[in-house]
Structures are given as C-alpha cells and as structure tokens.
Length: 247
Image (cartoon, rainbow, N blue to C red):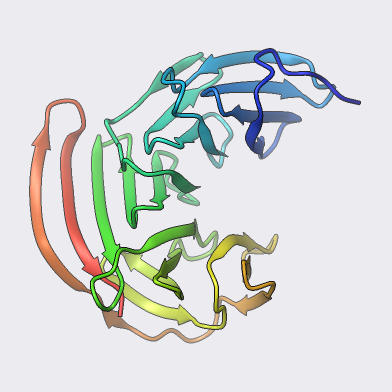
C-alpha cells in the first residue's frame, strides 16, 4: 500500500498516534499531513509557511490530542488536530529542532532540543517557557542531538555533543544532573524507552547501541548556572533563560 502526498515534497519525520491508527508526516515544505492506516489523507496544515523552514520533528502528546511540530529553522508549533487550530509561544532557537518530548503526566508540558544547544521547557497551561543554552567544558557550543522524558520518573534525558565529546545527561531540572550515561564516542541521535519505561536504548553515529537500566542508583551534581535572568513577554507569558556548562 502506498500513496503520493499532495505537495510531492520529501518527508522528514513521521509520528504514530499513541492510541489510534493515525500517522502524522512532516515535509520539507513545512506541511504536516494526517493519514489513517489505509493512507487516506484526513487533514493537512502548513505549520511553517517559510519555504526554508521545513518540518524536522513531530511528536504526539501522551493523549494524542496535540501534535508538536519542530522546524528546520528553529520554530515550534503545536497543532490541535481535532480542532484544527495551531499555536506558537514565540519559541525560536534559530537552529534545527532535533527532538521533542512530552511530559509523561503533565499534558501541556513539552521539552524541545536544538542543534544550537538549547533545551526549552514549554508549559502551555501556564504560558511559561524556560530555556537553557548548554556549552561544552571549554565554552564550545554544544548540540542537543536527542532528548526524552523518562516515562517512569519524568527526568529529562538529554544527549549532548560538543567538539567531538559526547555525553548523555539525566536532568531533574535544567540545571541539575543526577546521572550520566557515558559509553558512546560519537553523537547519540536516538533515545528509545522500553514499553515498561525501565530501560533506555541509545544509538548514534558510533555504530553502537546501549541499553541502560534506568531505575538504578543516581549521582547528584549541580550544573553551573550563568547569566540567569527573567523576562516577561506579552504573548509568551513569563520567560526564563540562562546558560549552563556541562561538565
């Protein structure tokens, strides 16, 4: 079974609905198409009108009512596909969105990672955005190559790469590292949880797959927080931004 999409543009990302036979597909032209398992096109929306800002990542919320859309240009849009409405809280990392992850039990909370080293926590119910930019040990820029909330603990697992150094950090918040998963030598592009949420699979450019027992003991260590400031924005509500160094 196959189907040619309406805009005939290369697809960049696909996401399955968590409980229904629906598939979302994002293209390089900034369009998102919703299809059923018979590949019947149900709905389409242009989330990024700029022709240079295609869709890089898609992620359904836990209940499947919302679809987060990350862009090659760094923007994030959330599509309420049932009501056919979109919203954006002026999040713009100015670099490709590499990963999206919904909080396991807070319906309105979304984590975003970018190639510019940004990790953003968006809470749509409170119109609150927290953004941190991470750097390597010597101040080099860091890429966030993947991130994912633990379905059991809601800790945020973030894979970083900076000047050839790769690290997977487990965060309880954007400045507190409670564990490090150190085995990979090259960028980690994929984080995938087992169905029971206790084991994490990681894989990347070094041709290595690792399985981690995520319910083991944790180490606690604080990140250095720099340039903490708070800003109020008319459309986004309260925003909080700071810089951190991964060590």
